[in-house]
Image (cartoon, rainbow, N blue to C red; front, top):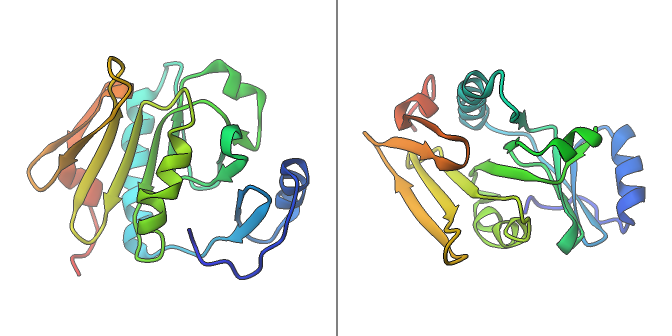
Length: 189
């Protein structure tokens, strides 16, 4: 989780009201509010590249893609997170303007400050979403993609890793693209 500059305790309703008029973005976990920091160029570029592809792929269908400023509510753990990208195909998500509750796909672009939380507690929280079918972690430094996909038969989350030369497949929305397209205009460090 991003480092907290100030920890404030809120009810979920108070958090949502406060967040609407806040100058910055904050995630919420069981009463605590955590300020989010800005992102690096590579992070933003990867998000734009993937959102552009997903938007074109989903156009005209029931699914919608959201980026960065849309919260996802995980009621079972009393949390609201700002995933880098979320896709929902559930009509019930059209009922809420400031957050979504039924994403099928969530994507996080890793950074040094968030990688451990994104792989650990955040993924653990997201797994409480009955609608979630895939959780994707994109590493800007190693240029790799880890796709965790729910196996409907066993209920286990299975890792599908992708690296240079691979075609990334997101089965939850019937999408595939060369991994290199995620990294267009991203400078190698």
